[in-house]
Image (cartoon, rainbow, N blue to C red; front, side, top):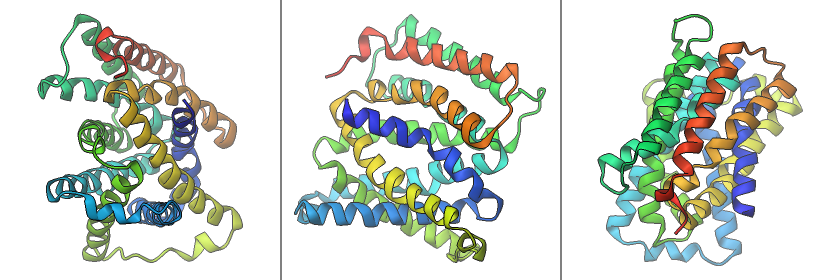
Length: 291
């Protein structure tokens, strides 16, 4: 329960805390440094726990899967989420991203790792309706930010499912070290090839607040947050672990109102209610109890 609570709070603060940096920092550059700090945090943690040598015990097949997971998570899913934060408000990005339990269910059915039932199907229908409302709260114009959030949600759902299979044989921190390294390598290659570079803009050093936000995103959210999240996935089924994303929309919305003063319309709240209701239907299904 402790791992779950820590993950919920840290993940709920991601979009809200990163929003101020989006006015001058490229989203993919932020993603790179966020996970670089997270990687260094986990290496230090593994060294302190004397488990860093466990990397040598990872089989070649697991190593390939972990590397693939890192690319999916960092280079694609988290970069897309940060783009969503840039091109929409923090609450919208957080709420749409938290629709990933619906995609976890759909992907699990397609891969035949979970059984289909009417209750879950009803949850998916409600959830999709909620996402549509949140995406179209300014009229039926779907923004780039909303599309990036949907893309991030789908990719992260795939990450959750595959992570469950491989993390059963490895320590969570080792899973993250290997996957983060691969994801960072691909992200760095993209930034260098695209001429965006790996340099942090001078604006980030003009305020102590910006530096603290970057450190928080890297060390707390991408470091300890991912350790506790993998612990949660390892203990529960992928869909049950996704209960974090049932509670995160409400918590992230509260944070966005308190810290950013974002103004959200009625359609947003209707959509939020539908998404949370849909998630609850899926996660409360008898097929998705803990192992």
